Length: 213
Ligand code: GRF
Image (cartoon, rainbow, N blue to C red; front, side):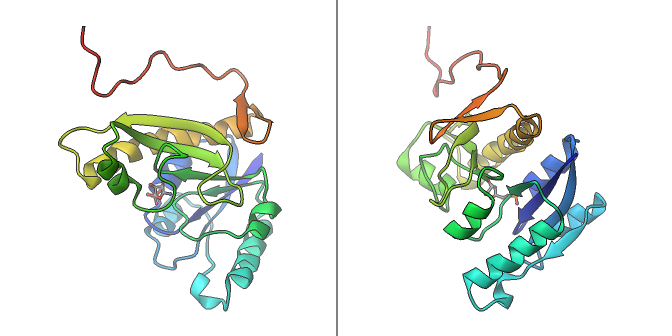
């Protein structure tokens, strides 16, 4: 069985969705840079080993990442899953785990990389928003896209309502993406495109608002 390390910084709802998905893998550890991350408690209720690598305890980014990498490797992780992990990772760290480091981002990348994606989507007036699971590269919130989910932006939405609608989809697509990886069904074609063996194309387009007639 492949071994996963899940990296979190806070709430841990994506982590929990992954734990609940009963993937054909061992979750070797949940690692947080924040000692108070709520996700750590949740992980323990699932009997998962947890570890804290507190970024504030290190003089610079490089030494923090060294400690983080040691923790990941000590747990024998094959795949590193960023699930609300709020530290920017350096090119060295990314290179070390190239092809086995994945992230979820709450927007339809390449739109809205970075923070406050839901607020920015509302401000931009987009009618469709969503989330993306991708392999991690040196550039922030960029990398070969594995799966995306789109949701409509509704007239009565505020940031919280839109975030909740997107989060429900995050909880569907992240376990799915990891399952495909574990099943060995992903191939990188070219620099940026991911092919997924046997994946079904979606049945129809999402129009927001609906087309009438
Ligand atoms: C999610 O919206 C995720 O896409 C983003 O940070 C948030 C983490 O939420 N990277 P949770 O900790 O998984 O509940």
